[in-house]
Image (cartoon, rainbow, N blue to C red; front, side, top):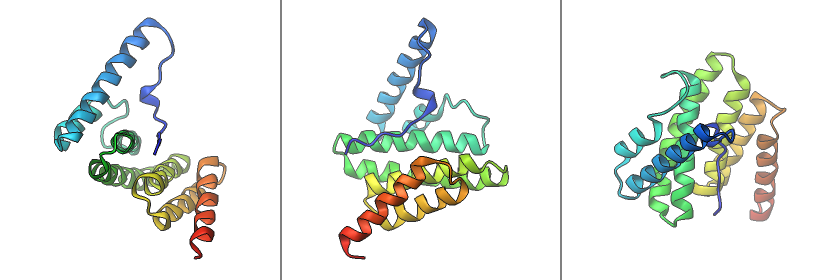
Length: 166
């Protein structure tokens, strides 16, 4: 599948302490993958979300959490654990829907668009639910039409509809 989800917590600025921090986060992520493969989702969540940078219960926290769950779902799908990928994709979508609601209430339309874009990506690449992906991408564009990812996703879904004869 090759799905990747962009998340800021996995990036490094290049200095030694940042590299150590990145290495630690990569180790934590791999531990989360192992826990999710064992279907210990509660422990996977604790490991995965324990170092969220955003304030708890904020729209940004739920966005960051949803992105991490999406990345975990992609990792499981890439390792051919499709049942685990579906389970974790569902967790991601739940977090991202909460993020969307909170971000809209906070007036952060670009971030709400990002949440819907990630939901669209999950539906498209992991769940293979193209109708839901199209809806998510359309919502992303509606919240912030300047975001290329939402527009590109919506265009891809139009192509999928043509291919399937809808």
